[in-house]
Image (cartoon, one colour):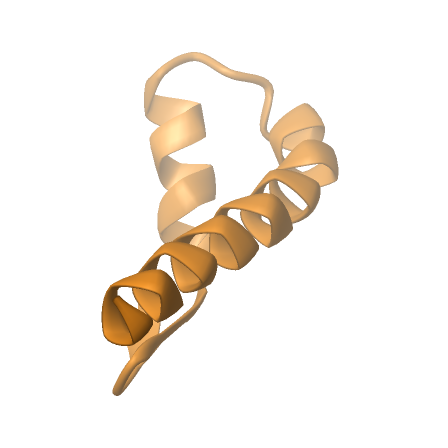
Length: 55
């Protein structure tokens, strides 16, 4: 993951694609879907982190 103090910015896509390849997942398909999955993950993790600061 790429992070800055207090926020998640995203995934290391090179590492994510290497993992997909190692798992036998077609990398073209992974490259197509990972950005959308990453966006949801980043948003949800940042919401959770924000909730912990407010609570």
